[in-house]
Image 1 (cartoon, rainbow, N blue to C red):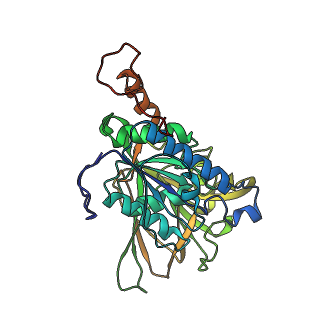
Image 2 (cartoon, one colour; image 1 turned 180 degrees about the vertical axis):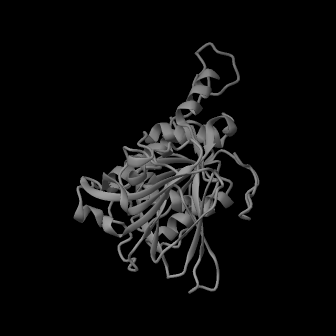
Image 3 (cartoon, one colour; image 1 turned 90 degrees about the vertical axis):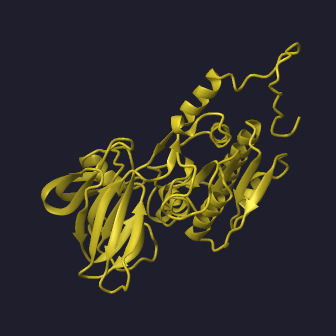
Length: 361
């Protein structure tokens, strides 16, 4: 796990017992709820999770909790009345993904030792945009949750504090995530764009960005996935149903859609299945560059983002350069073996102090 600035040029140098908490207030509330059976993650649920994360981190000795502010004021509501060293990072308050990107970058600059992020695949990508190698615990509160996990906020906060404070060695409990890296050379632009996805990138034959979610299966031209689980929902399910790729195994897969191959049924949106024609399946090794072309919109982790014109070239490769994902179970196991959760007995003359609980009692 890195402890100094990476090639992206961001400034932090050391890590301390500072835990960052980022929430996307819009995760789990997009248009897919109008056209599918997708559930909704309410503000109340997110507030509850954030409060548990903060309480767990404070219990485990975090000297500082950094919260991302948002247009719904979820952070302030989550920690109301909680006794702890809580601060807030500045946010542009745009109500868009830019707030998440800015929060992650601010926490990087503030030398946070770990981040707990609440959202879906898109939110995790935004965190990684702001801090590419963030020590991260991702809690699923979005629509497509291939990258984040459903974990208890209390345990997530404890694990984050253990890593942030160096109680457990980050190198022993983190794994660098894969990324789909794209270099986009569009003749309509003056510069070459560089974009990344944590799960999959896809070309959608539709020039209208509008609602960012991809819901029309007939418009998908190709998908490059570095995580492809048969149990996932969304674009990643296409690759997962024809060529599964686990998150910690090397490489990924390129799926080209079209006639001439096999036909598969996939849940492109929650509760709704589509039949797709798969023209070809091509495994991709780490670092191998594949040049693709097409006209439409590039989608990253399920959300349409970058229009590309005819004649564009998209160079795609799989890299292991994403966020450093914290293994919660491993972190707590090592801490338990080191008796980090013990408190002194009444006649104990040891030097380890008794921790205060989240309310300072």
